[in-house]
Image 1 (tube, rainbow, N blue to C red):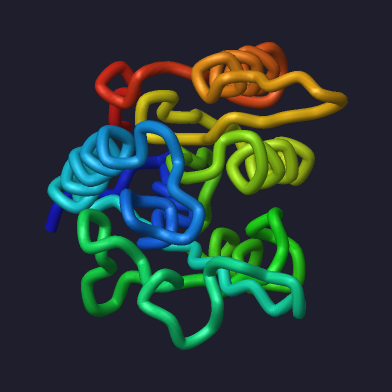
Image 2: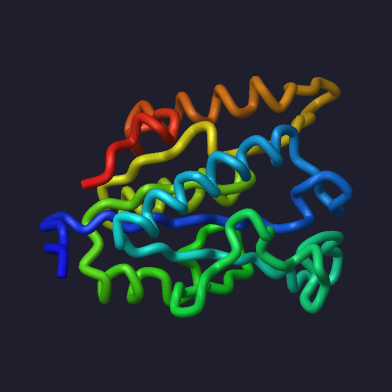
Length: 187
């Protein structure tokens, strides 16, 4: 049996769900490319025998237009489909920690470092990475395994590429090591 790394690294995959892909109810810019990188990252973790946690969002607010319970859009995308035994955390808020068992699950795995990928960078990924940092985890963010969308405010629109750059830069300043997935070495 291979020796388990001293410093457990857990891959956390956030909201890579059908509604974010082409044809979905909330299509993101670059979802297919980010999904492919996330799938390759997932394959690396599985091959190394490292733990993986999937996070899936269901919208329960009455005004929700995507991730509706019981719809195909709320299902985890096939590119990162969980295997039997891989935990799936169900959430209803942007933070993967709010009102979920994620923290308890990570503690049970003796996690010290989280490697994160997912969608939307500016919302659920950002919120979860900041919360993980506040909870004392070392966090790494696979920049090319995340996707977002254009955002508008006060009559101005920021292109998805600019939104992505701004959020990755902010997270990388304090909260996480931000790099392309291929540069994030396994323990």
